[in-house]
Image (cartoon, rainbow, N blue to C red; front, side, top):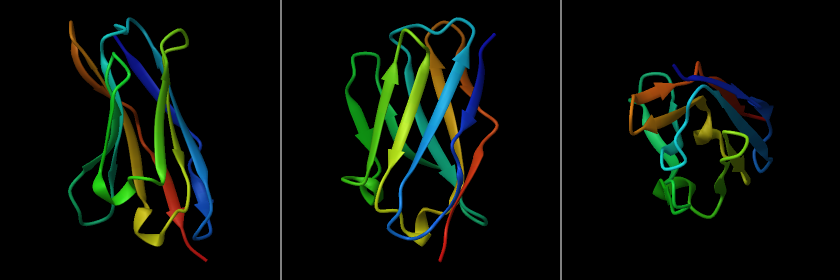
Length: 116
């Protein structure tokens, strides 16, 4: 069984930065994909960024150049550094892991609010 716990959300002004951290417990394969989705009220959950076991990354077009995803396989963590935040980045952010042997797991979500 895998459990994911996110932290680091909060309220920030436009142009500010936040760092989200997701800590995974349980058996995580080093080849698993880890990443972040977000969901704003009234919208579908969308992929923000993901990092594959080999270290390559994908980003949503709307966050490219502003967000950076990283992972620490020894600690089973995946981070999302968010810079130059905009009001449209406001959402609940969810981390996930795709474990080859046992499927996808989700965190409980953390709220990010960008507002002046």
